[in-house]
Amino acid sequence: MNRSAQVEQAFRALRSLLIILVFTVGALYVTGGNFVRPRGNPLLHALAASWLISFAVAMLTSGIFRVNITMFSLARWENDGDVYDRKSIRAFRRLLLHSPLGWINPNFHLSTNRTEGDRLLREINAAEGVHWLTCVLSSILGISYFVRDYALYGYAMLLVRIPFDLYPIMVQRWNRGRVRRVLSRQLRQNSSFPR
Image (tube, rainbow, N blue to C red; front, side, top):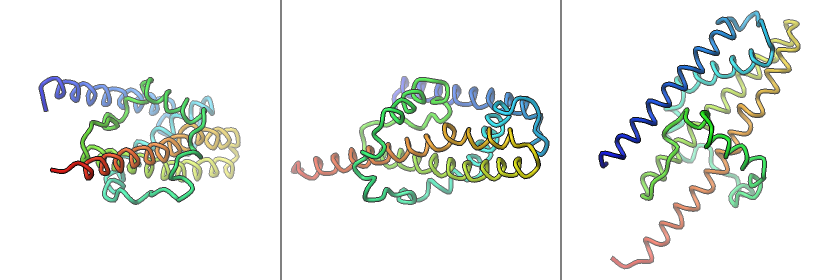
């Protein structure tokens, strides 16, 4: 790795750490560290609680999801990517790439070699797994708010699942198909050239 690539990688890591720190401190402030008795604006509470749950899930489980790149394999009807090739998915992907939200994980960058493609597939698996678990845990929290007479907080918690978990899951599945197609194209090209 050359010097400028190392500097770029260090910059991305520092930027990622800074944005995670800002989001976490802000989320702790908004929730007051209390999930049992929500207070304040329901939407802000839902966003903050979702961030804290997502952060905790990522820290505890993302390594597990990186082990097997076929863990969240695509179904036959997903392979061509048409089901995810919608304006809203592309717009959300663009938002992630060009906003501070895209800075959270600096490992979502691809170079041209095969090992980088496998690494990116592992990162995609980790992101999808974290979002699935976050979706389940946050939905359980939202339902518990309904049961405990915090209906507005429950609605907000469930509503936030769409941009916070469902769209990122669809983006990861769309990207997985795209990365696999690129890798298979590279494999075909490399096998067609005599050595």
